[in-house]
Image 1 (cartoon, one colour):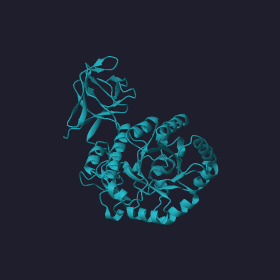
Image 2 (cartoon, one colour):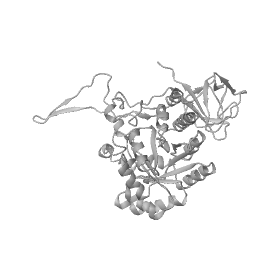
Image 3 (cartoon, one colour):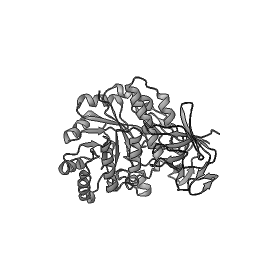
Image 4 (cartoon, helix red, strand yellow):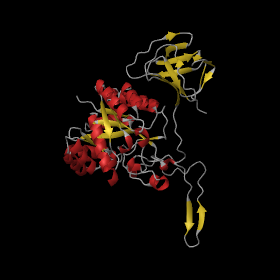
Length: 421
């Protein structure tokens, strides 16, 4: 049986390694402004992206290269050079958005498979077939599509692979077809520099055009004016329903600009959901418990299983502040002997250990502290905080490696549940 692919974000080389450590089958990322994540893309240069592709292939995994911006005329020659450079790195596919770029890729690198970006907003089998006939082997469906429509697309174009987003930020517009950021700050969403203006708080006014009088519209206290702030997508509880259709080839997590912890935990949760589905033990509460430890804007199941007009809970109107049940305290170094502080840690603190998929952790005790198991989870107690010198407490501003009681797997995270007020 061919299992669905789990596709995770890779904003840089470290996040690429974390995604694979926590169970991703493939990652997506890119170099330079030809990707739709300029800020993330800058973290990959050509050399580190090549290293990431080689690393993935050594594990039998895949890397999809994002070239999904919308080019101006003045950029087309630069696009051609970029496609040629990226093709030389032998990624497993290009992710592209426009018919012109599809044609350019087919001319320059006909051996590289093409995946159509969600930015193309494919919603029906006519468009899907047209892109397939252009040479696209996979379509990343619009976030606004329904599961029933995906079944129809597969029925009409059976050889076309279908990829859907299952987790991450949602756009107020049709997957980036938005000018708010461009109007307010000159940052163009479809060329990779969205400023997330829909997350801002707005004050509303009403004007009488006859008199020019301007009235401020006062909100009901506590209801907020974050009128365009979309909740984050979370389809973990619907994985069984999605996979039961048999038409989806890849499940995609959004978030190349998100934190290392976000990449780890979302990949971990969806890996478990997929594996449990195939083993006949699907447990939505388990995956949701992990996903709720990450920072988020509130969760919604989006539009895949409900039409937009049937939904009234996809916007978070009271604030754009991220939430999460846990605070990440530290991240273990690649050598496994130290951790780097992400939040205040003091002597005597007991922190939960979250390790990569398949990792082995062993109990131990030393002068630095203890690693132990309790209630089915692993914990570390820090009796000594040593980072060049000893500290009673250490803060995130201290970038020195801190000694662990004993070795832990690379890319392990230490966290603590946030006490509710």
